[in-house]
Image (tube, rainbow, N blue to C red; front, side):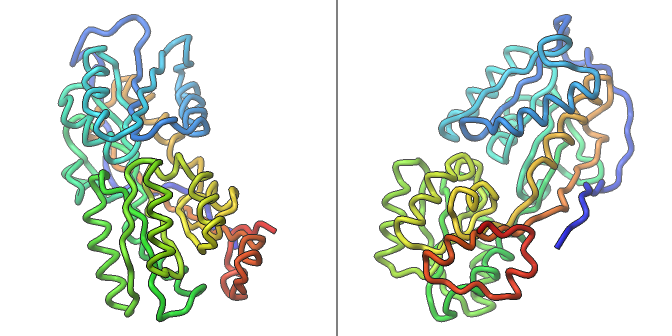
Amino acid sequence: MRRRDFIKVIGGVTATWPVAAWAQQPSMPVVGVLASAAPFDPDNLSDFRKALADAGYADGKTVAIEVRAAERYDQLPAMAADLVRRRVAVIVAAALPAALAAKTATTAIPFVFNVGDDPVRAGVVARLNRPGGNLTGVTSLQAPLLLKRLGLLRELVRADGVVGVLFNPENPNTERRLEDLSEAARSVGQRITVLNASHEEDFEGAFAAAVQQRVVALLISDDLFFRSRTKHLAALAISHRLPAMSASRSFTAAGGLISYGAVAGQVYPQIGAYVGRILKGEKPADLPILQTTRFELVINLKTAKALGLTMPFGLLNVADEVIE
């Protein structure tokens, strides 16, 4: 099933804002990328560079891009402060932890974020159509997607089983997402158990706990740290014979059972275009928050067979991709 590729603009108008208003900039503007997990996805960086070049800012020629990628979320405030000291022209904040760190670090330097949560609910912006302040960005509104993933998993395993949910407790959106998921699980009578992992060395213990608690499937929350470790998570799911679901197609390509999330390649072209507009003088406060609206369901049929699972025909029929 094909889905149309588009980005929805939620209202808003644009206005000019001289870039020199917050600081005297060097002859070549510097754009700082603040990433919530290391390494920063090279495909996202490539998409961003291309969009910025299309806007007239070629990396290394008319603009310099500097990446700061955190191994742990508690490193982000210092990294954001460093970019402020560097007097970069614009900051790109990858994921909610980076956006919150950038917002704390500066009210003057504009920044463009990519967050999975509702940025109003998360306290990042005041409104979607006119975010105000020095920021704007793109959201994929992950809360309803998390509930959708739970529903898809329930089609694969017995209804009376316990579904494990892997969260990163250091992510500032974890509490909100857990509240939403717990309420949805109660409404359909689904038992869930929470498994925590903040660092890669926590993965083995989380999967061992899942097996010990006899969970029938594992739902991996959409966390940038988890996304940067999809191969490891997929390998652990296979070795522990756990049907597991992620938001990232790369998880399924690496051998995970199933993924449902935003199609890759949507966000950073939009972020690059916004950064280009800001460098040319537009005010981020008047650039509306964009929302990703193209999603894909990917199933690894080879993994399903290895786990002894029979994939429902209806699920296979609506999948955007089946890996055989």
